[in-house]
Image 1 (cartoon, rainbow, N blue to C red):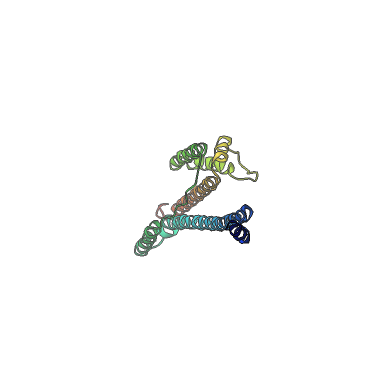
Image 2 (image 1 turned 120 degrees about the vertical axis):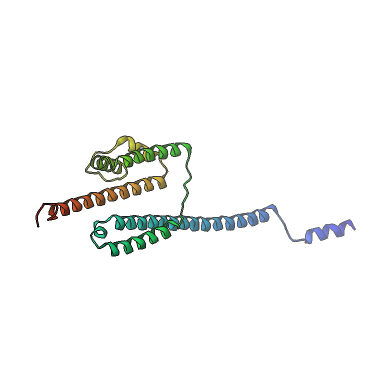
Length: 208
């Protein structure tokens, strides 16, 4: 009887630790490959969402630029009212689109972003009172965000803060500064056009 059990045991297929290890490694490899593919999809998703976020901001900027343009103030009141209503409708619909891509930050990056944002906010508050001075400050801040040598002085303190921020925040800070500079440039252009038209207005000069 004992001999029969020994023979039966010997005839069983081998099931060694080595074969089980290979099976576990195979499953682990498949799971790792699946996670690698998911990581690619996650990065693609974040890039697509970031692109949508930038497109939304670009549309909002263009609508505001249209509303503040000199052209819309140079047409008759009826047409201006219709265009303004259309622009406001587009503005409302665009604002209803909410796209947000979060950024994982450590405590140092959080603090650097807070300080950098505060500096920009303080300059924005000065725009109405001193547009020329604020524009020069924006240029110095933007110079701290670019790699090529800028033709303007660099704000070294701000540059240190930007470097301490997360990479995604660095890009957003640069984009915000570029948007602000475009807005300032457009505002200066509109002021010059309006002032020029005022000088050329016959009634303003007291002539018929």
